[in-house]
Amino acid sequence: MPILFVHGVSSRIENGHDKTWDKILNNLKNIVAPRISKDGKGDDVWIEEAYWGDDSVDFGNLRLSLPNPEAIKRLADQKKSWLERKRKEFNNSSDKFMVIHDFLSRAPKKAWNWAGHELTRVTNPFREKLNKETTLFLGDIFFYLSRRGEVNKPGAITKELLSNTNFIYSGYTYDRYIL
Image 1 (cartoon, rainbow, N blue to C red):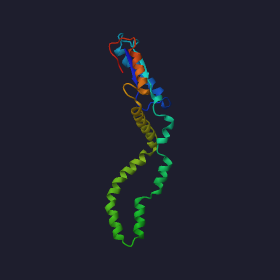
Image 2: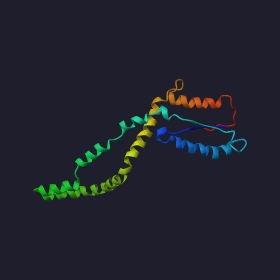
Image 3: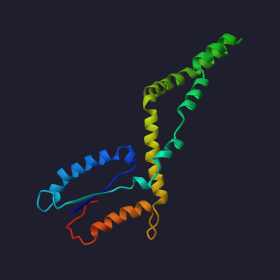
Image 4: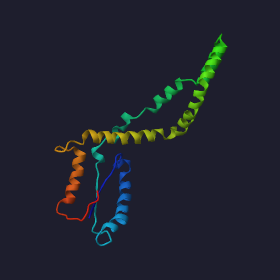
C-alpha cells in the first residue's frame, strides 16, 4: 500500500522543509506504515512525498511584499501621543472648557484603544516573522489558485501531484490508497 504525502503551503527547502519532512517520514514509517501493511511491519508500504514548494511563490522575492519596519517606525515617530497634543492644546487655548469637553468625550475610546496599543507593543518583536510567514502562506495559496490550470490543461503544481499519483497507480494493485 502506498502513502503519498502532499505538503501544505509555506514549505520550502530553505525554510527548513527537509527537517519537517524527515519527522513526517519517520512518523509515517514507524506509526502509520505498520498499521496499514499486510505484514504488520510496514516494509511493504511505499512512502513518497510530492514536493511542490519549488513551483510556488519565490521565497527570495518575499521581501517585496513585506512592510518596511523602518518606514513604519518613522511614521509612528511622526505622530505624537494624543495626551501630549491635548496638553499643548489646553495650554494654548483661550477656551479651556471646550478642550476639556473634547478631551472627556474622547478619553473613553482612547482608553479602550490603549489595550490594543499595549498588545501591539508586546507583539512587535514577533511582527517581522509573522509578516513573513503570513505573506508566504497567503502567497502560496493565491499562487496555486491562479496557476492550478484546468482539467484538460493542468498547471505545474497539479502536474507534479498527478505524476506522483500516476506513478502509484501504474503497475501496482493495492487494496487501498492513502493520499
